[in-house]
Length: 187
Image 1 (cartoon, rainbow, N blue to C red):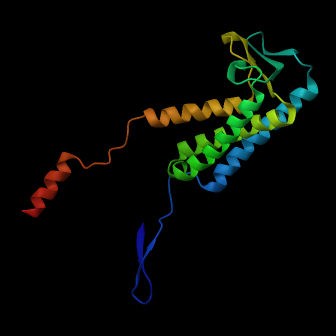
Image 2 (tube, rainbow, N blue to C red):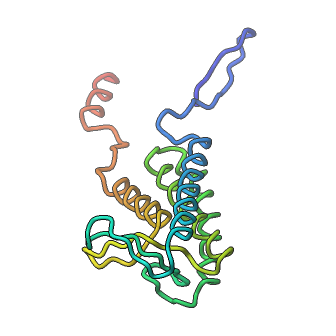
Image 3 (tube, one colour):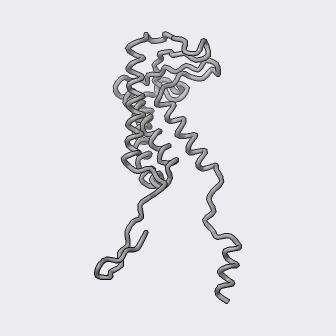
């Protein structure tokens, strides 16, 4: 909060602009770009490959393989599409709420929430429209489950959040030198 004085000499409180947070327009823009990239890439894969087909990108290490996933991450609970659609709906609401409460204050946190939101919406649309999620990135070199752009955005968001919360916290209390200076000025 900052104080300003108008022409009549009255003091008013004003919200200071945030300098380090992610503005709402950018938050929703990032989420929309993730969603659009996810849906476009899935449409392209579905229109150019048959279910189960693989095309090498980097030899046998990384391929495009069209798969349908009715379960969660790593195809867990393979018949849980409705349950995961409900989870995604709750997650979308929670991500928007979390951004409004916390994410507007820090660009890394806001960006993480935006990436997760775009990914959650992308996968939710697949679940509602198709009854499964379209997956196609196949990292065979590490025997990783097949995934998509929405999954990648959600993973990056988790990495950003972990990085943010594990980095050295900023000190909010004055150092001992500051206490000494204050004590000396009061004598």
